[in-house]
Image 1 (cartoon, rainbow, N blue to C red):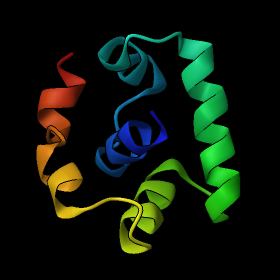
Image 2 (image 1 turned 90 degrees about the vertical axis):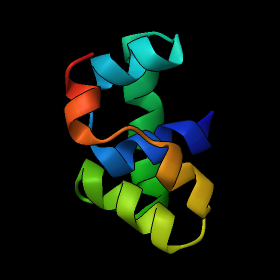
Image 3 (image 1 turned 180 degrees about the vertical axis):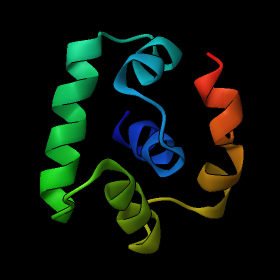
Length: 75
């Protein structure tokens, strides 16, 4: 689940959009995002997604299978 959240952070949707896409509660997504950000030492959400991808948490398939920002924001 964390891998899916990180791949979405790389794109930048809201917590609410991520919760709908992942089928989980909004508050659960917020807690997991905060935990992941703390783990990688990120100050902003996009930075945590970028650092995770850069650090090898995501493989090429995760990044390529993630919808682009326009598709995600329309959800």
